[in-house]
Image (cartoon, rainbow, N blue to C red; front, side, top):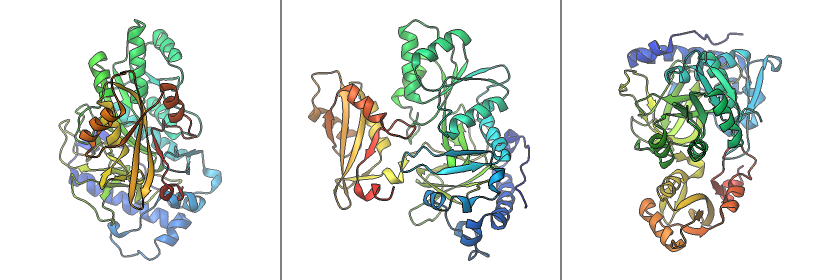
Length: 432
C-alpha cells in the first residue's frame, strides 16, 4: 500500500515562499494523493474510473452524503489501523463519522500546532481549552494535540460552568484561551463584575465569526478587545478535511496550508471562481491516510485572496464565512443567510439574546421569524422588525420571548453547537 508522503516541513518557510512555488509543490502532493486513493479507496476506485485523463477541476466532488452513505468504502486502510473515530457536529443534518490513523493524528497535531505557533504561543505558555473534548468532537481533541505540538501546556476545562473556569484562571493564570466568542464575552464580563484580574492576552476563537465578510469586527469581538485588550484570532475548521485555518495578527483572512489542503471556490455549476468572488468552499485533504477526501463540498460560502498578506506570507487566505448553502433563505425575493441576521441583531444593544426560525411560506419562498429577548420595555416588536429591515433589506417577523425560553431552545438540540438557527422548512428537513 502506497501512503502519502508527509514531510516535516518548516511550514512558515513554506508559506513565505512565492505562491507559484507553493502551487508547484501542491500539484505534486495532489498527484500523489490521487494515486493513493485510486489504489486504496473502494469509493474512489469506482467514482474515478471514468476520469483517467481529466484535469483536476473536472474530477467529481465528494459530498457529506457520500461520507454518510459510503463511509467504509471511503477508507484507505483496514479498520484495525484506525486509531480514532470522530463525528461532525450535525449542525446542518445528521452527524457523519470520520476515521483517523495514528499518522492522521500526527498530521492533525501539526495543523493545529501551526495555528498556535503563528499566534506566538510557545514552550511554557498555558492555554485554557474552553471547548468540548468529548462526544467524538474533533476540534477539542485537535486543539489539545496542537497545544502539545507547540510545546505549551493545556488546561482542559471545557465550555461548562463559568465559575469553574474563573477558579482555574485565578489559580493557574493562563495567558491564552480557545473558546466560542459568546462564551469568552460572558467570561470577560464575569471576571470584570467579580473584580478578578484577567491574565488572558490571546484568544483563538471558534464556532462563531468574529468578523463579517468585509472584515469588520462583530460586537462580541469589539467588546472583548475594547475591555481587555486581548488579541483575537479567528479560526475556520472543517472536521471532514481534518484541519483548520487561522488568521494572522493582521486579521485579513485565514491563511491556508498549501501543503496540507487544496482549496477551491466554486459556483452552483461547479465552476471555479476568481479571487474575491463568493462561492462554495471546496477542499481536498492532503497527507491524510485513513479517509482522505477529494474535492469535498463544505457547504460554506466564502472567497479567496491570493495577494501577499501584510504579514509577509504569500499563502492564499480565506475570507470569513458568509453563510451555509443549506441555510440560505429567500424571504420576499431577497436571499439572506442566518449569519447576516445574527450580525444585525448583535448591533442592537437592546437585544440580549435571540434565535431565528425558518418556515416554508410557499415553494421557493421562506418565512423568517426572529425570537429575541430585550429588557427595554419601550421597544416594540414592530419597531425592532423595522430596524432589522434597514440592515437586512427585508423585514422579518419579530417575537419577544423570555430569556430562559431562548436559552433552553438554543441549547436543547443534540448537536454540540449553540443552535441559533432552527430550520423548519420541510423541503430542507426531508433530506436530513
